[in-house]
Every structure is written in structure tokens, then in C-alpha cells.
Amino acid sequence: MATAPASLSLSASTLPTRLRAAAVLAGMRWRQPQRGRMVVRAKIREIFMPALSSTMTEGKIVSWSAGEGDRVSKGDAVVVVESDKADMDVETFHDGIVAAVLVQAGESAPVGAPIALLAESEEEVPLALAKAQELSNGQPQQVPPAPTEDAAATPPPPPAPATAPTPVAVGTKGIASPHAKKLAKQHRVDLAKVTGTGPYGRITSADVEAAAGIQPKSKPAAAAAAPPPVAAPSVGAVPQSAVLPPVPGATVVPFTTMQAAVSKNMVESLAVPTFRVGYPIITDKLDELYEKVKPKGVTMTVLLAKAAAMALAQHPVVNASCRDGKSFTYNSNINIAVAVAIDGGLITPVLQDADKLDIYLLSQNWKDLVKKARAKQLQPNEYSSGTFTLSNLGMFGVDRFDAILPPGQGAIMAVGASKPTVVADKDGFFSVKNKMLVNVTADHRIVYGADLAAFLQTFAKVIEDPESLTL
Figure 1 (cartoon, rainbow, N blue to C red):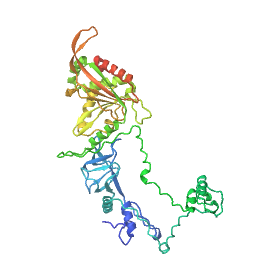
Figure 2 (cartoon, rainbow, N blue to C red):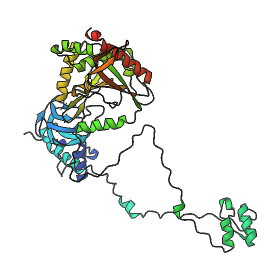
Figure 3 (cartoon, helix red, strand yellow):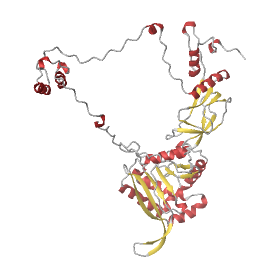
Figure 4 (spheres, rainbow, N blue to C red):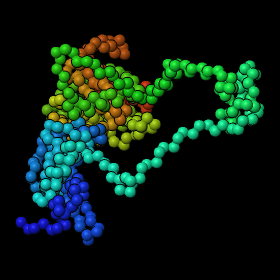
């Protein structure tokens, strides 16, 4: 192997100890201006935990595709990271050698934290290992510079003594507070012989009492002090629940990354003022349509999503969103997020532009989304771009339920099962029809009761006369 140039040597005879350590930690450059120009250029790069979604605060390492000592090229997948929604491959932006893995598989790290070190060449692997050791031990603290000999020989100046109020000369007759004059009269004290200690030599009550030989009264105990003011809760603040002790004999299971994200979103939703509106809908014709298109792969969820998108096109305020509490946004796209239960959590794949696609193309897109969701391979835009959410528990026989509004959306629809129900028509005749109940939870800052009622009427018309769904 060729001899390394002198400028890259890190031996004890070449670099002072402190500068050697600094070069190892920084992995960048060291100069010695008095002996010519010695430069250490160590190309050690950090692989950081990426932010795979807008809500991700930490990620969990699922597996390393490249191990320590492996050479990787720019664009190679080196690690699989579990975000709050999916498992994703993380690529490297540089060529090099994986010198040190800082976060092992199964461990978590916050977004932006280094998870591995990449060395440019084999010669720099020892530097990367030294840097990894420093990172594992914690960042070194800044050491204050040692004092020079001159500074050490010179003792620090003593602190200046606290200056007492400067008394004025005796004989400042008449410069006294009204209360001091009153006390002086009571105790027969000549103010001309009293030295004032107040501002600008003013004679205070304490000065008169001291001249009369009266002991000052002790101050009341600190218990009489006013209690500190209690800060008023801010608008939209979410109350934090107390941590309860575990039940004896119970097993504590920590949240997965996805469960922690769901918990965070649900707690945030408590800060949004919401209201709920229910609506009964006859589904006989929708059920007939479903039986016709079911062999072609169309699901009831897709039919409901398409109907919701068509109704939202006529009521854009229900498709709007409020994110900052000061304004709201009319979304130009109608993207229907549909809640899907997967192993270990809940995710909402998004049918984008659901109002513009036919039910057959939507069904194909939905099939692909569900497959990717259960494999935890959804891309961020496939689960975070929803403008309206649909949650359907009808297939489980649930007749009605309320859904919690996701943060950043204007409304969510909860769909129950369609069941035979005795109904009366406008002429008073009774018959048995299939009827389902839908409940919509909406953000009351942007959607009002009349808005939601009008939207539900339009949605019901599409369901009860579903021919427009096939156009």
C-alpha cells in the first residue's frame, strides 16, 4: 500500500494531543500556520435519521442493508427505517465505506440524529471509529482555555464592596418625609441632627426611629407573601393526563412507532372544537349496484369514497382545512383518506382525486394502496395528503359510531352497517328497506351545521340514486 502523505499523518509526533482530538472529532481540517501549511482532510460523513413524514419525530431501525465494512455507492439503500406510518429504505448520498453503525436494528433515534458513519477510504475508518466512540460517550464539553502565566501571577481584583446609601451632612433641616416629621414630633427628635439615608439625603421614618433609639419592627414571615400567579391555560391547550400506577400483575407494553403517532394525533385532535351530525340513508339501490360491480373488483368502500368525493365537489367548505387556527384553506384536490386497520396500528391510505376517477380505476388504486399499507411500504404522499377521511365499520356489523377528526382536516365520516329497517313513505305506507347511518365529525371553526347538513343531503342523494357513480 502506498505511503500516506505527511499531510494526512495523525501520529503523536506530528500533531499535539488537543489538535489531534479535534481533528478526529471534526473529521475535517487542521492547519499549522507556523510550519508551512499542514492540512488534515478526513472525509467522514454522518448518515442521519431522516424525516420520512411531516409528523415523524423519531424513527426505528428495522434492519441494515449494509453492514460495517461494506462499501456503498451514492443512491444505495443502506438501512430500512420504520417511521410513524411505514417502513422505508433510506439511501446514502455519498460513496464510501460504512465504518460504524451507531444505532443498531431494533433501536430508535430522533430525527436528525446520526445513525452511522461513512468513511471515504479505508485509511479513514479508524478515524470514524474514534468519532463513533466519542459520540457513544457523549459530546465532549468545552474546556475553558488555561490561564497564561501572566494571568495566573496576577490575583483577581477583590470584589467591590457594596456601597451604603451616602448620608448627607448633618444639618439638612426640613428634608424629611411627612411620616418622619410626625414621628420626630412624637418622639421629640430634632430633625436638624438626624442624618438622612433616603434618596438624595431625605430623612425617613427609620432614620427618626434610629435617632430616638426605637428598635425596628421585624418584618412579617414570608408566608404572608402573595402566592405566585397561576398562568391561565392557553386557548386550544390539551390537558395532560396524570400517569397512573400500573395495575398489579399487569404487563406494560410500550407503543410501537405507529401507535405512538396515532396517540399523538388523537391527543392533538382534542384541541379542535368539533361537532357531529348523523344522517340515515336508504341503500337498496346502492346494494344492487354493488352486486353488479363486485365481480369486477369494486368494493363498497370505493363506492362510498366516490360518493363522498362527488358530494364534496358541491360543498368545498367541508373539504377545507384549518391548520393554524387563524385561517382556513380551500383544497383544490379532493383526496379521500380511508382508515385501514393493520397489524400494530391504523393508517389512512389516500385515494387522490377521487372525484375525477371512475370506480374501476379507484378500485385498482385502492387495491394497490391496501397491499402497500399492510406491507408498510406506503410513500408519505400516499397517506398524508388526505383532505377528507372515511371510516367504514359496516362490514363488522357496527350500526353507528363516532370518528375522531384527524388533525389538519375539516371532516371525517363514520359509516355504519346497512340493515333492513321498517320505513314509512310519504303516503304513509310501510315497507322494509335497507338503511345505514352515517355520522360526520367536523371542525366547527370552518364547517357549520347548515354546511354539514347540506353536504349530507347531497351525499344521500348520490347513494340513493347511484347511477352517477358509474359515469
